[in-house]
Length: 332
Image 1 (cartoon, one colour):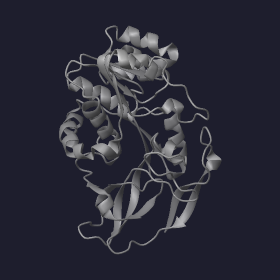
Image 2 (cartoon, helix red, strand yellow):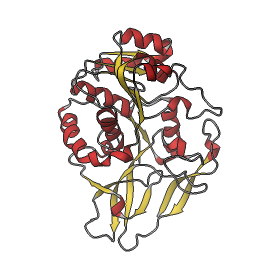
Image 3 (cartoon, rainbow, N blue to C red):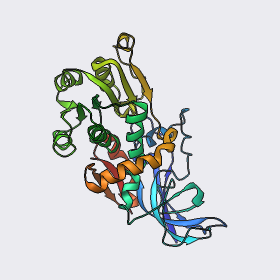
Image 4 (tube, rainbow, N blue to C red):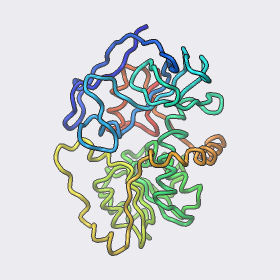
């Protein structure tokens, strides 16, 4: 059988270009002792992957040039030499960007397609969902009555942060997004108290109008102007959770930091980054609490689905552009 997989050919400078990548055909390998062969059904593309295309020192090893890239995936076992794993089982694993993967099931998690749609294990019930849950509740130390501001609020993580905050008793939840359509979605479907299109004017002014009494927690997916505005709006002992800074991922020059960092001292603010890998101990608690919200419809989610492995790169670039509403998924 032929396997199609995406390789990184050169490290992008600025915005990734199609010539930095190649869709390569290889032979599907046979699983060895203790391994399984998985046919991937859904692939995840996420903003953090841009960082792994660089060789700069970071929290995750860079993708290797000339080799297949990695990412979250859900697939069906089509051949098994591993005890406890049968043909037809479904696994959540990290060997995406390809149609078939040979892997050790110890590095994967068995998932149930009858309990929830397979794609949700890459989003609302997967890594992005856990990021939202741990970031808001543990890192952000959210408490009932807090006012919360979320940037990139129509994305996979941001939309879940806002809804969890509402379900947990936030006094007010504000979101920013990049289109009027997304702003409408935040308020009318996800239950945000207010939202604004950051392209319609200075973030600082729009945030002040949406949160006249300030905010207690800021969940940052964007960085840049949003972070500066949030620092200015945070109340005494406010917390900022830094999940991503998509506005600067493709910058080729150093980007200036917030100009109002003296506010951190004046208001005794706490700013802390969140990486989901530090919080896998919350996985069971997360599924037990969030799963019923999803099943009952209390917590809503959207997916932007792109068809075909040949469109995996375009789906990834779409995430960087903000084309997606909710989780960007590639269906094979």
